[in-house]
Length: 481
Image (tube, rainbow, N blue to C red; front, side):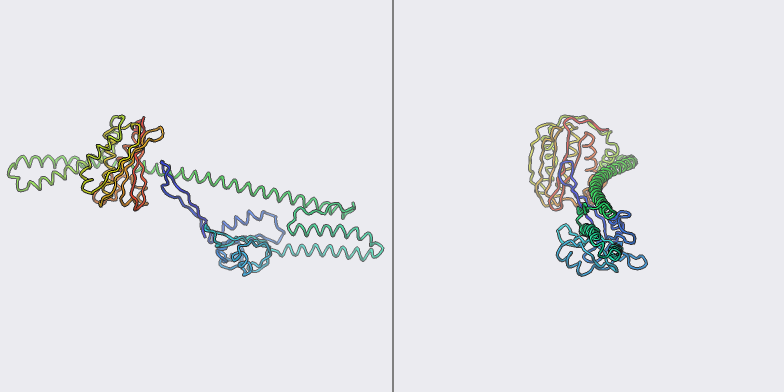
């Protein structure tokens, strides 16, 4: 049995991005039932020799309890009586009665437990040992009966009238005690018409019952106040946990980016030296061989092509490692125009994959960003969208105003979507799902470029429903170094 909770998680656009779930296992959770027992039975709330117990049932089997068997062993795995099971689990009623628990009779309460579908899956039990109360009641009644017998024997018929003045208050007190035992805490003896010891006892009994009612009311108020405080502290703790997790995630991302940036900068510079030597010797080889190089010209061309590819990868690494060295000027950019320019650059990819372009330009204000860097970001998002639709589909380009802050540009594809376990890592450096076809730097560099101007890059995707990447741009950005 598990206490389970789940809350939705929203992205900055107000869309649900996931679900946060949590739970606590109740099987053999002795701290849970001990806490319930401590809350229900305060110290000195029961007679000497009696003790309170609490149990959590899964169906009719004890899975967490402080009821003991022999040698202090908890009665885990034992079952409830058939009468209790039929009434609580079978009929869904609450049991308030005496019940035989393991090896003794207890004054018991059983409450059915329902799951999230409203089905009865178990029971919660609290109770206290009946014997000390039964013995105390028997002793009190015995004392009263002995007192009556002594008075009757000593007084006889001569004191019959006086005896009645004693019997009547006692009967009223007994009736009051019985009514209180039955649950009527407002029952009182009242004035008994005499000022002797019996009258004072009746008066003191009423005072004790008044105090008992007051203590009971205070206990209920305290319990309600405690519930409110627990709920409030729980909400504060959940909020603190969310803030802590977000802060930890940002710190880990910052540390990761800093470490990878330092490493990649060194690697990129180390690669540049042999690449320059290869390129120089390749140019010298073509110049020296001249026409004699014709038989291996194709091989030379392939080497030249791979050298250029290495240079492009090194440039991306340097741009990722030192983004401020590549920062451009801030322009007031017409995003719709940039999108159209990007479509011209990737037209050959669209034609090969039979992809239809859907335009939905609604933004009415420009965005503050370097035009070239914005074009780099959008081209990267469009190329990724095309790669996600190898059998064709729809590429949707949309713009809209972002309150009074700026503009939102969304690139949506109708491809296979992104698996949920990849969404949290999609902007991590060197993370790619294209295996040997990508470097894993495109989205990371795009994220860094947009963030440099105070914006952000987000993704929403469901497997089988495509993906939507949104670029949040400010009209008046402050360049972040």
